[in-house]
Structures are given as C-alpha cells and as structure tokens.
Length: 215
Image (cartoon, rainbow, N blue to C red):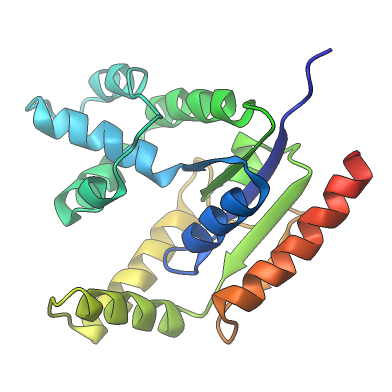
C-alpha cells in the first residue's frame, strides 16, 4: 500500500518570513518544497517571453497548464516586471484553477511536501495535517524588504516599500477568489519580534506533534 504524503501548508502575507521558514522545514524533514507564488510568476514570464497579452484569460490558462513546477528559478522570477505581470493574471479564476490543480499534484509527492503561498491551507490543501499562518506587522515586513534590497547593493525608498506592502495586503486579502486569510485550524506564527530560528523551533514542535499523531 502506498504511503500517503504528509503535507505542510504555510500561508501568510509578503515578507513575513514564510518562504525562508518553508525552505528550512523542507530541508529539516527531507520534504519537497514549492513556493506557489513562483507558479504564477512562471506563467507570467512565459506570457511575457512569448509576447502574449496579459489580459486574455484563455491564453493565460493555457500557459498556466504548461508550466513545469520542477526547477522554478527564484532569482529570475523575482524580477519586478514579472511580479507586476503575475499580479494581473493571478486574479483570473481560470488561471488559479489550473495552477491549484498543479499544486495539488505536487502536494501528493511522498514522503511529504511543504507548500507556501496565500491560499494553501484554505483552498489548495485544506486537509493538510499541519497548517501554519506566518505573519508580521506591515512596518516590520517593509523594513525586512528594505534591508534586503540594501543588502544587495541597490537603493530603496522605505516609504514606497511600506505603501506597496499595504497595497499588496489589501489586494491579497480583498480579492473574491481565494483571499489571503488563515485557515480556521491554522497555527499562527507572528514573526514581528521573532527570529527565524525561534519561528523554526515553534514550527518544528507543531510538525513533530502532528507526525506523531499520524504515525
């Protein structure tokens, strides 16, 4: 009998630390990891590369169904223009359906998977045995993004980043299709005043308890 995959669903707003935490958890448990936001960015990049329109839902859906989830390049897909294009197609229900199907197939990988995004615990994997909602105040998240940009030797405007974080929260939490919100049974991790090490320790305790229950 095949062993069922153990899925860890991690949601939260931008720059809350969920990506770093997800990668650490996947490494610790030897699980597959998927940053689901990159699937939208990969779809957007494919549209841009092919010179296709960003406002044609049928075309965007077709491309979304062709996206290969293995080997998504975070550095390339993090480019600003790709993020802007991704935000336009991410509101299309047909695109979301296509990518959610692909994400669910990924979540079935054994021995386990860690998926992070905006709607993993609520939409993509509502039956996941572990759901974490990682958050932090908008000010803290803007400061992290600001420091990250400066750390790469680039220039940044803190006030502009802060406004962008608030706009993105409003868009993610206010959209009709799969809004960003914690699942009813999600464990809340507020990293505003928590180091990534402390967040990892807290997550590990939750995951270990769930693995013991599922043993």
